[in-house]
Structure formats: C-alpha cells, structure tokens
View 1 (tube, rainbow, N blue to C red):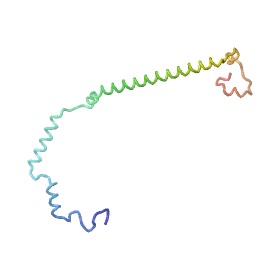
View 2: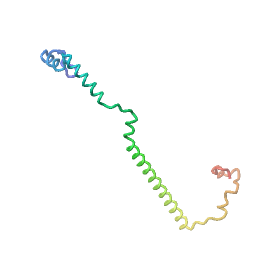
View 3: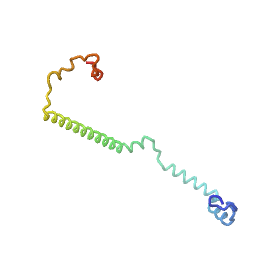
View 4: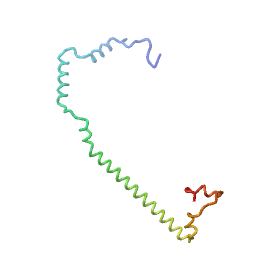
Length: 130
C-alpha cells in the first residue's frame, strides 16, 4: 500500500463512476454551443473600453500625492523633534558647566596656536598637527 491508496485497483476500476464523471466533464457535443460562446466572448471584449497603462496610473495620483505629503510631514516633524532635543540637551550641558563653576583661562582659548613637541603623544590626536 503506497500513500494510502490500494495498489490492486487502477484509476478506472469502477465503470459506473467513470461513466458518470465522463458525462459530467464532457464538452458539449453541439457546434451551436461553441458558436454562442465565441459570440459572447467577443461581445464582452468589444464592450470593454481599451485602457492605456497611463490611465491606470492617473487614477492613483491622488493617493500617491497624499502618501508623499504624509511622508514629508512625518519627516519634518521628526527633524523638528530631533533639533529640539539637541537644543535642550546642549542647553542642559551649558547650564551644568555654568553651575559647576568651570572657568576657562586665556591659555585654553589660545591653545590652538601652540606647537606640540614631536615626541608628545597628544600630537597624534590633533587632526591638523597643531
């Protein structure tokens, strides 16, 4: 027994069932049926207007414009929120520096003008070699 089927029977072993299935699935014998079918198909094809592919796209233009507008609005809202968060965090950092009493001396402000000795490890960290 293979795959749940009996191996001693063929597909056409029941003649009554085979005859019933053949009559149910047999094509119509009369030629008039085929002629009427052809006429119905051709009539249906001639009733359907021919649509160019760009006409289909034009039906979707409003939906596409709305989707693009929504994408631009969401992108703008995200940028504004990120800029606001960055400004708030920089203001908080500046406030923390001011509250801590951090002082900046003149040597720190003019440190860009001094040269590091060639053996100083910090010179490898300076991007422009000052």
